[in-house]
Length: 546
Image (cartoon, rainbow, N blue to C red; front, side, top):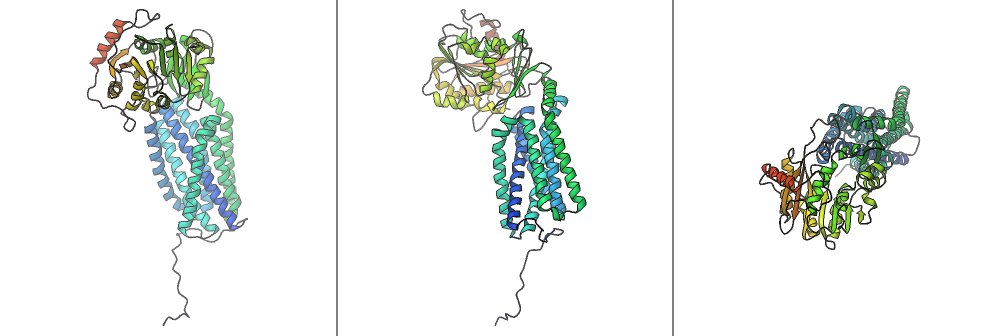
């Protein structure tokens, strides 16, 4: 028989040692207070992901090789979040004060991270140590948020731990989604990297301070309250000053990176465009940088573009396709042939095309190619465009004027799948000319491009061009002041479907300035001496470039 006169003992999990477990005295109903905590989790998660994406974008932009930088930032930050979660255990006695202090530090570090990284790159020439340091520090602070918010939400209304964790992580993940979408589609195109990070830090500081100083103000002593108010006002003042000075800072830092004649600097939806050189005078003094990398130098670009285009134009060339080349310089060489009937330029960034059309120096350098009625422009990713058009369009010549294969975003445009699409778009007897990166300094990358073309069923004729005077199209870090010496040559591969095209320059080619049939034959012999045999092709699931 069960004795019901003695109440059964209810077993409960032990409370965390040192945690504040008494109910909080709130100025609102517990249900409203709980929603405010979850809203704070949402905003802080969005801000945290913006900081993370900012570090990823800047790491790729300033250092190069986006896969490596993404791996470094993510791995360091995730490790640091674990460290921050452990360190947060020491703050559970004063969770409200600890959370507000962490948000102040996070807003300051995250808000100023972009400016600090750009400063180290501009004046010290090396951003990787700063990138790792900011990734670790921001990760520690983000990792400390959830444990303290868990204590705060339990102070409002006790519930089982599983339910509280589910609510917190749901708000955290949804906030991360919003932050992840806001960065590329709102903050970056409208505000840029520096101001976008500063605005995110401001929001972070206001929300973190507002939750604690209003909702949990009775948990704070008078001294703690004034200490937090002073800290957050100081952070907001610093962020405001940095925002006011951001444009001046960017101009000064840009001059430190690019020199004193920065004439055009704008952020498109794809990349940063910087044009240096005087507004009038010789176009040879012009330099065009895309995401910090020198893509056009007026001093020697004609050597590159003649070597890329002229060998491919031997034979039928009425219809020509230029992949990349939004600067109009490859199209300039093609349009010099009067029997060319149409040229299609496929360029991802409409900002490059707009600059090539409207800037007086750049349009003079490209011979005002965009004013020629034979030229048409498609602003789309070359891979996707070829995939949709190759079944219907055929070309006599395809010119692949793309960034070096060592730059990760362009790797798919040097894949076996991409060259297969290009081969389908060739007419019988057509030629494909590919820029394959510097031959002498990066022979493995160059011969991987050649092996990939052969794997796509094309017959190849490798060659190079010397006389390189600048770091034009080198990579991945092509800014002035880079510790690496600029390459002295450009590597190319001419390919055809039925047979390897003959390397020569037609006698009626329009006034070549740097190229002859003999120089091409000499360059082909020199290229063969550097051949790296047995290299596997690069494919979409297994890129081979580094």
